[in-house]
Amino acid sequence: MSDHRDQAVTLLRQLIATPSLSRQEEATAAVLEAWLRDHGVQPQRHLNNVWVTSRNWMEGRLTVLLNSHHDTVKAAAGYTRDPHSPDIEDGKLYGLGSNDAGGALVSLITAFLTLENDPTLPVNLVLAATAEEEISGPNGIVALLPLLPEIDCGIVGEPTLMQLAVAERGLVVIDGETKGESGHAARKEGINALYLALDDIAAIRDHVFSRPSEKLGPTGAAVTVIQSGTQHNVVPDRCTFVVDLRVNEAYSNEEAVAELQSVCRHAQLTPRSLRLQSSGISDDHVLLKAARRMLPTAETYGSPTLSDQALMPFPTLKLGPGDSARSHSADEFIWVEEVESGVEGYVGLIQACGLFLGHRS
Image 1: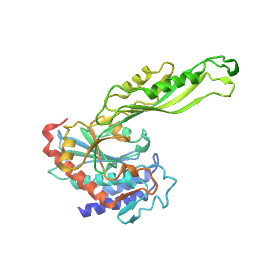
Image 2 (image 1 turned 60 degrees about the vertical axis):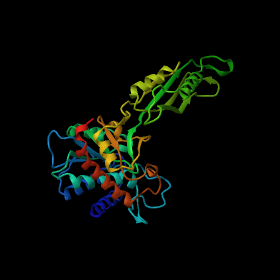
Image 3 (image 1 turned 30 degrees about the vertical axis):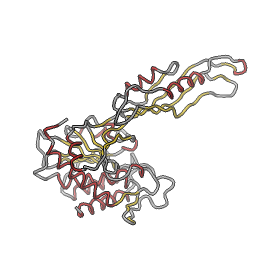
Image 4 (image 1 turned 90 degrees about the vertical axis):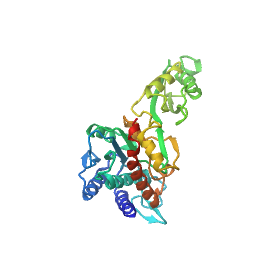
């Protein structure tokens, strides 16, 4: 497996050295295309998304998507080194995107190249290296999914310390608005929209959502922005605020917004988007059974962070090398040995799927 590890690390260093901010991933898409062609497969490209199917394809077999992203956030202000210099020091590979999610991406690519033409492969594989994940953008996985073969389930490569993230919270950003009547503050005229908003903000703060979740904990809402008023002596006739709503798998986003609206006496709540739904995988799914077989010490957990998993309409398991706590941090790094464990873990998981194909979910 050391040769595979070396290949994965070489590719990761190329990606780190190539800037790839969200919406600006053209160069890393070209790197990925060239790498895959040089390793004997024929990738396709749509926008800045690169994808390829396994050559050992058999109709009627379970089809598994191997997905991670090649875009990054902007480098944090606290960097003490060049974020695009892929230096290895004391076993650490430094650089922007090394941990989130370069390590997972190159591990998935290496696992795919290791297995895709194996006649004993128990599943069909689709590899997709996608763009705009960090912004949940329209030109990433959402644009690519209609072009792919029918997918049964997926492995989403993100830094989880190779633990099994079996569920992920949904996200809804909500604009709240209350309307009153303006008047002179000294004369106590009008209806103060700010006071109306405060009543509803208190109700949102105190609300306990009714459907629990063992995997993700309770659905929760937090008001994070408020704006009202024009000058000190005018009673405001309008107040707006923003709610950050994190949704567990017991709710659809629509249901969670409706429950929150029901506790507001004055405010109208308008979600900006409902597409980032909670996601996950059932306990008896093939992928999870295979992962537990090949990673017997790995723990299952519900992930508090958002990924492209939220945009996939099929069961998914989030799994990968690296540590989510390092993501978006200054002097980001991944341990070289984590990349090796990522390749080994993905290869073993995919091969083990054949043991459980009588239990599809």
